[in-house]
Length: 152
Image (cartoon, rainbow, N blue to C red; front, side, top):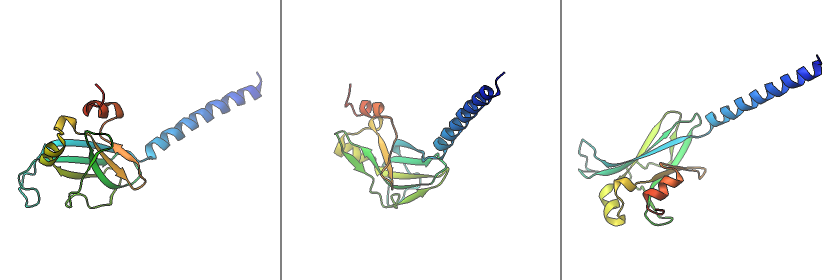
């Protein structure tokens, strides 16, 4: 048996395994924000700021190890490149730093969204963005287009 061949095979197997481990480590360490959007959300204790009106809640949770600084949130409007920016002074508090396992929510009045833009809860698509300009969406590209009827 040729020892050079054995060492070459051992080296290639070991380097392949180590490169796969590095790829997995990179995927775990990157920023990973999960965005969910909920319609017809009501605050139980009626407050002066929200009253008894239904709200749209955009929740952003950091599932990654790396902290993320969120700078805003919005709903995607029915027309191209139309964003309904969340400007609620109670929950916007920008910028918001999310460490591992933490979440933050944004609120928008649902009546305003429905009356002005014709969006109903089944059509809500939300996004949040961070300080580096990266967008995190509540739905993938195909679902976004289907929900807003941009493709049939």
